[in-house]
Image (cartoon, rainbow, N blue to C red; front, side, top):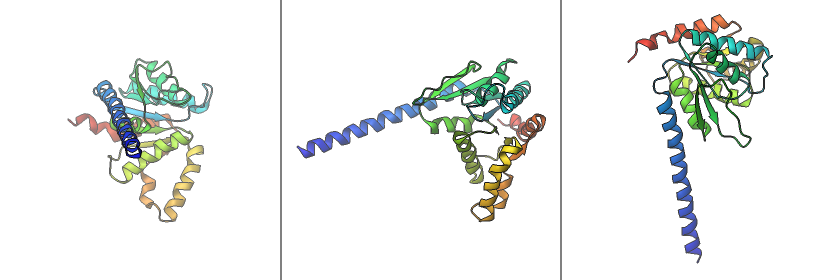
Amino acid sequence: MKDIQKEFLENRNKNKDLWRLFKVLSDFTDAFEELDDIGLAVAVFGSARVKEDDFYYKKAYEIARRFAQEGYAIITGGGPGIMEAANKGAHDIGGVSVGLNIELPHEQMLNPYVNIPLDFRYFFTRKVTFMKYAVSFVVMPGGYGTMDELFESLVLIQTDKIGRFPVVLFGSEFWNKVVDLVSFLADRGYISKTDLSLFKITDSVEEAVSYVIDKTRYIDTLG
């Protein structure tokens, strides 16, 4: 009887793993089909908790609007706060506004300014999609999710797993405190001093936009 039970449990676990694999493939297939012809795109990250009257909400809107004017698509996590602001900035001038929504225990609804919506079951498939289709990250102040997305991108750039695409940290009063920690890591030898150059901090919308355009312009010429 024990052997039968063991075999049953092993088969059930294999079936679960196989079904999970199909879900992973489904996430990727949907993303690749929808975004294959998106062109140059900038991913904007930041807190989901800020409101429409927040300073950084307004700046995210301006930044996304400017990128859309330059022909860049805007990709966000599709939720509220900074994500909504960036999608709205692109949407309001008829730009491409992508929302990569994630299924959560407390459901996160897509904001109304997304014109290319995608739903993901897994954070890692969503992250791969951000990395694959964005040529730059613009990171506004945020919490754990924002830090996760930022530091994963920096690790991939640091280890040459992806190209050294521009990472802009908007809001020096916030990011200088985070960089204090990163500088501490460099002082202790846990990262290299050169790793401090993997990102740019700015408080200027125009500087953020022009920096990304200068760094990504050559991509237009690649086949």
